[in-house]
Length: 273
Image (cartoon, rainbow, N blue to C red):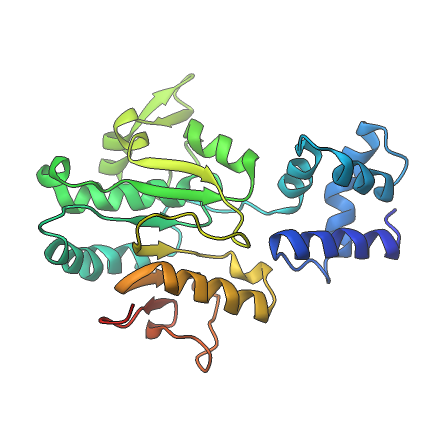
């Protein structure tokens, strides 16, 4: 069983390095790490944390992050965002970038891939036959290497796809195994670039983003961390660019530089660099 001292050490480590606030999650930390620590032959949570800090390959740190981050998501989650993107954001961008035909869309909490693939499907649907003239690749990042591996593989079971429109299922997925699983077709896979990114580190983007999805990730941050991340997102957006957050999440109206379009949809002021 994890001691108070070990719990403080682990939660402080996650807060300091990844901005993730686990200060009220002692039971979760204990439950998620206990088996891994026993199997690994460490005598205590403290011994395991020593190994994390001394492992220059970063393997144990990756395991710590993979085990303590939740990757719960599904296709069509909070679909009103995709509707808004298709009906409002993309018509604006199509006009705005009619010369460059270059869109920059970032999904900052890609988890196991459902969300970035959804964004890519919406883009494909919107541009239709013109899609080949546009660069609509989606950058999808996450802190968890395990989630990213799953996302890049792009294999989902029938249950995970049950909410998808039938035409999308046929168009973007192919059955594998005995038909109980489906794989994202290569043409859609090519539209999503998966990369690991810690939101606490400087964003490595060379060009500014038009749209950022950062949904259901700020629930893990305390208020100062949340404000810091939101400001970094604001700075990486083009004037008029959009930020989507989870429908159960909030931004502090008093401190956010964003215009509030709807409770979970925000926009950087046009003409604001």
